[in-house]
Image (tube, rainbow, N blue to C red):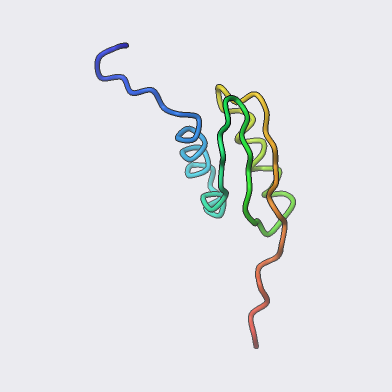
Length: 80
């Protein structure tokens, strides 16, 4: 191990990529890492964001499989 080097976990890499994605709502997506598989869960307001989350995770080094269980549900309607 190189002195001063801290290995990032897959979960840490995903969290960082969600944070810098520009889509702040992705920070609410839960990630369960099991070996090289990642299970995504939570709720997002559009199918587009669901796919963005999956694409971001699929590009993380060490991820071999993504299971996307995110539910798409529009935000609750606000009363007038």
